[in-house]
Image 1: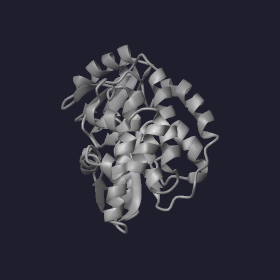
Image 2: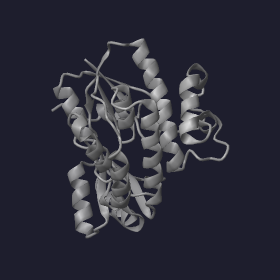
Image 3: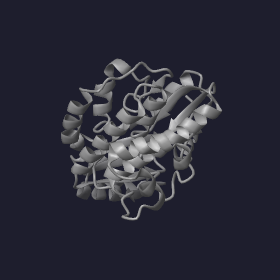
Image 4: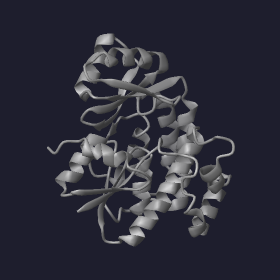
Length: 280
């Protein structure tokens, strides 16, 4: 049994999707109309270097993921029994499952990106080589109150986020742990932490007006790590901004459901993480 995975922000690069836009002219025109700019120009040429800006990176990643997902699902219409996405990628999973149509998903992603970009002064760092429990203990021992575990990506890979200065201090404390490697991430927001609460509140109001269709294929939530409950879709997608990404738990749920094969669109970021999560 197979699951199709969709990555989130961070996989953007100039030139991505270059082979897709001419093959999907109607979808590309729709994206231009929803976003108010040329999605092809942004993804392929990025003349104004906007792909490093959350407001543009998220719609770009979502749209390229969506076209790549359409390609994969057309080629293998009966292959994927489950869908999952990491943070932003969850919108692709929901779109592929029929919960959101392309226009609505793009509108939500655009507004999500705008609101997330408004929360500044934050920082994030990837931590590799040590278990999550060690990372949490180091944060606690430093006495820092505005640093959090934001992504639980693999058994020995997490992401910390929060106040920029405190994240840097926490990173130094974690880096002295045997085997630890701390790498700052080039973002300005404390994503997936309680510091995103202002964005979550505003986005919750946006989601309240959205209609969600039943899922044609089961989706696993990156917020709970369990099957996505469409009846709670607005709450889950609002919480996604300030709650940690439970990727280890999501992979565990998929494996428990019988998934043995994981395919990924737009790179191998998530596939590499899956391989670093032990069977339980």
